[in-house]
Length: 212
Image 1 (cartoon, rainbow, N blue to C red):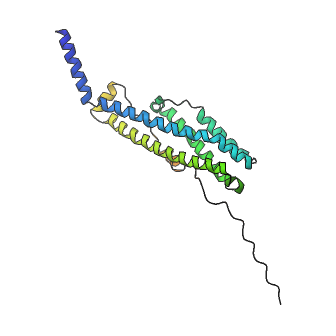
Image 2: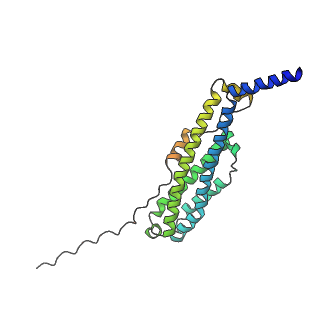
Image 3: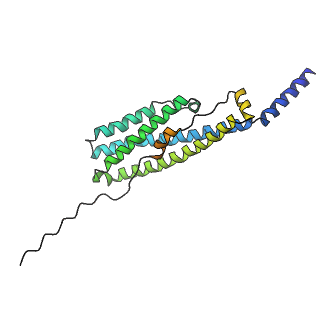
């Protein structure tokens, strides 16, 4: 009889969890992990481009040491942060990661602005290839980040909604860290990549015709 009652209680608990959104919460959590992994992957792809980009610029603009050092240091700060799936459960660590990525974004922007002053650098095939890779990576970062934002929004709404909020509290499922309003500027100002032609030399004015 006791075994029967235990089995009955277990069955009720299982069906109760399904009806209270436990499976939905688990599914949302997995979606967030997958979305976050893609965000991290694309950020890493960008970081991997930095050494070659810096070395290429250095070959034409060695005097821009402050800008080059800024990019190198920003990449080092990004690399110093240990990124795991659990980082999204720690708002402070999450914001530290986002801030470091924002600093790298700003440093890369300054580097690309400086490159405009060096026509030979802009026409270098390797530099233009790195620019194309950076532009593609920035686009992929934006897509991956937007997917993460959507996944977290859906999950956090579920965590706060009744009756799934009771299930969330029972299993210590809390809201996930999200990009904040402060991050919007960083999100919307990815490094601009200009594929325009190198600036042309100014036209030399024609000499006046000799007086007759």
